[in-house]
Image (cartoon, rainbow, N blue to C red):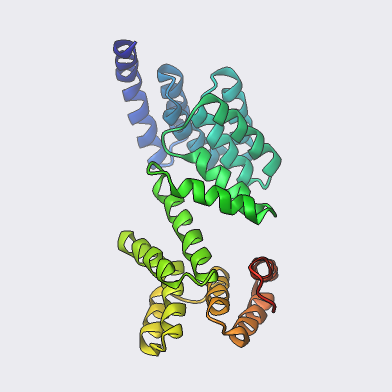
Length: 262
């Protein structure tokens, strides 16, 4: 069987290479060549490349329909994961959840797309305990894709911060920054520096985090709440209410879930 897979890979490689080249230069043939590479090889990763090219060239609806069709014809976890991502992009969480369940029944995809979809669905849901349980379970894994590993690290850092486990929060934030730039980690360290009275250090972390945007202001509100600066929390929530009411409401719910009265 391994020899057969090797031969099939050799046959599909030129189609894959040509498809990627055509896609890079926005050539209409790119998606079709990538699709051919998928059909020859049967490899889920190549199906994802083809679907991504189709999403770019033909739109979300067309890519969603094709992903569902391919999953029925040649089921594999990679196609299920990508179909779930497309459903999330369309705001169809129910469809994404169904694709997630189908993908998990088929096995584990190599790049962790199914894990990412599971996290996003939990984060969008209203069950904060379910999200925490998932994050703790994922945190035990050593095979997560970098993007999901980063999200789990951020979740854990802010859980520690809001639970008063400041040393653990600092370790998490510093680990995130040791891997790559991470504005939420900078904000966590900003809050910790303020708590210690290190205003210059706090200002440096705030500058490193970058210009204010709703996501960062939400993290600032969480960090301020963790160190008891409730007047600042209220000011930040007013800013969010003006610029992104949905994020303001989400922040209030998060804080209430942690027992912070605003």
